[in-house]
Image (cartoon, rainbow, N blue to C red; front, top):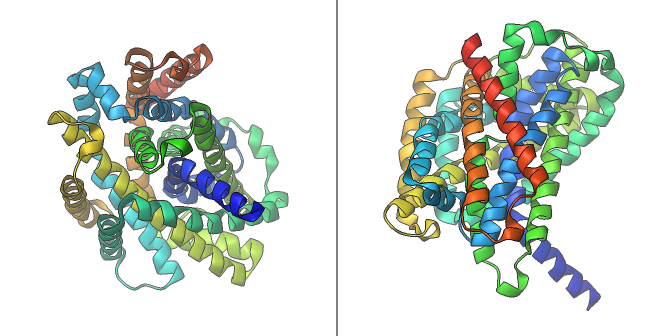
Length: 420
């Protein structure tokens, strides 16, 4: 009986934590494997504080999505519409150009790891297109339930191997670089900061699909098993902490192995992926490196699936709202059309714009960061002005936290435009 009760409690906890774990699965991808590792390789431990700060600053705007979905049973998109049609349209227009290039970047990064782990099956652009196509088909067949089941298993592999590797390389890190702020006077370094923060831990706009995932997760639960507001906040907070810790781990790995040996990150997808797997090999040995490579590939595939689902779901739900329906009432056909439309544009992007992976990623992540202050502001307006129970509204500390994030991110966005 005790065993059965424990299994039921574990299953319930797993269901309640679903959106937070999907968020982690989407986050621990290009921002961590590529950008955080590059930060450590180029700057040593100097940018660990930047990584932590980016995660801390973005947290309230993401959590506002959880709060609104929990208290209203609707996504942030409904909140945007209640602010005015201008808010919803502004969000959709700003995001639309980024979706296909984000998909292209995710596909290319995954293709690089496939090339290293399995072998050069196809040229990287073609392989990236195949990966995006397969991921889209899987989503159209399985939807949220498939994503929810696959995500936690694949994520666990990478977390364990990365923590072990980090512990092994800790003694090699030049910790004196932690207090090195000379990068603040370098234009290229400041531009990289914006690129690093763009996807750290996720693009700011992922707050919207996070709220949609939360709504769908709640719909699958009987009323007796639905989480309270406090439980929902905690079930997002701890996966969020995990994404921050993992980002720091990848930075330490890059600092401990690549920076200390003066190894510059390669620009092409297979080249950088080979360097990433080499970090595990040098710390844990060839056998563990193979397993870590498979884990890295698994979690990147999860990121691709989550990324495709996030934006297709966002635009399908938005279409439902603009045609006078609830955001949760979109049909499978509307979701499929959004998937296929962005997939087609992503294919064009892959074959026309993608050559230098790291340069392409910097462009994508920087562009995402530029719209981040606006998204954070919209989310703030939703939870302070839209109809919500008072207990679900953010505290004064949370509001001040988010305003600080908006000001800092806005300042960095202005700096980015000035420097470029």
